[in-house]
Length: 148
Image 1 (cartoon, rainbow, N blue to C red):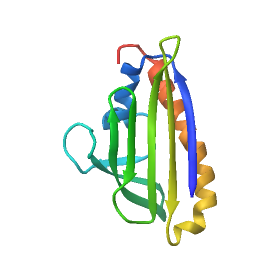
Image 2 (cartoon, helix red, strand yellow; image 1 turned 90 degrees about the vertical axis):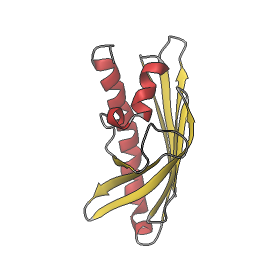
Image 3 (tube, one colour; image 1 turned 180 degrees about the vertical axis):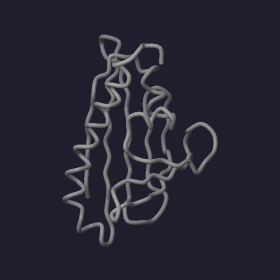
């Protein structure tokens, strides 16, 4: 099993950061994970998406379902399909004393079948990528105009 956790402080209030966590079009600006909606409408508890990660020939697609959506504070998900990877995780937003946002993420992945052999290599890469994604989000939100 792979576990990960990371956080970043963003000089924007949670209300400005939240859309980049919950809206697929905005999320695509900072994450490497390709997403395809299965459920129509805004993201809420029960929303299902398909995500794909990795590179060919080691590319996996899995179905995720949102299990918690607390607007401006928290989003959590878990795998709803059976396949090579079982994944659950969450994002948390906390207002900092200076009015910014501490965005944290944590999760775990469990690999099945052949994928278990790749777990050590994938785990190291995943941990690097997770913090890099949060740093990209920080740059997206802080690097441009505050009008988001």
